[in-house]
Image 1 (cartoon, helix red, strand yellow):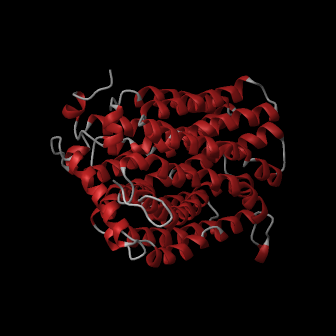
Image 2 (spheres, rainbow, N blue to C red):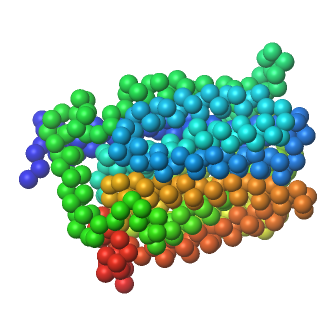
Image 3 (cartoon, rainbow, N blue to C red):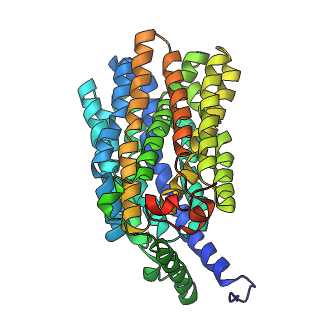
Length: 448
């Protein structure tokens, strides 16, 4: 029988609530800062491309080359979080990317723009997958998608506040510098400040948590140890074998196509809205938040539903299908801003709701360092989709003089991802309990 406290709450409830209160708000803020630094280039591009004479192709290449720098430290970064310290590694990342992000505001040529975005990717590499691994140090399998949904919803909140904030910052013209430059400079500073705060606030693992009472610390440590033993019942998988694991390869492809769609859509959304509406830069920045406002509750609901049912694949696939429908609908409904914004909102729902259940999948069949390496590999190589989405959309729009071909490309990417994720045949029991550690073991536990 689970012990209860004076308030009547069980030990499990008390521990979960305390961990949630301590970790999720802070991680939420960190990811808002990270995502603002990643997407603000979309708003800066409205004026930057005109001032510097960049075509959509140049802008798309520069926006996307971030991901080539990003892949360099992805896998080592996740292993450092697993084997060394999430707190120290995350702090290093934030301080360095904040500095580079601010310096991006001083670029004047296409070459400088490319280098600044590439180095920003190098600086930020390992942040997102590292925090995904970090959540596995604190949350059980059945709680993980919900925790990830809360954490990942920061991307939606960042997009929600990013538009109005960017619109306001771009009105600044201090010291003879354009507003888009101040947007990049000022939005880089919070990363440095919170990077320093991370060193003192985060705790690497439950056994190090002075803020967690002894009985709650013992409970979560025992629960995570029990899950680790369950994962260990299948054949062992080394870190190097992970890269040949068929499900890791499939999830990498799923994430590649998903990132192509998400970043192609997200980074070009201000331009798509401006093309459709003819609005000013400030007006575009104000209404660009609408799709993400609609997407936030959907993202949280998918994480909750996935945890409640233990089902991951269909939740992810359905989100991709919704995203594809929204993107296709934005072309089929014609050049009207109202219907266009409705379709953009549907696309944003799908592109953001795909994430909570998806990131719970690797721990359905791997544990420990192999699971950390798999998350790094998926985010590393799959993350390259973040280059091809913006670049191809920009190249196609430059060649055709409109965005139609690029948006159809993003639509196709969503549908391919939906099909591929359904090939990852993990059973619901395996998804909930973490049983199964390689392809042979998983084949014995397939869904009917």
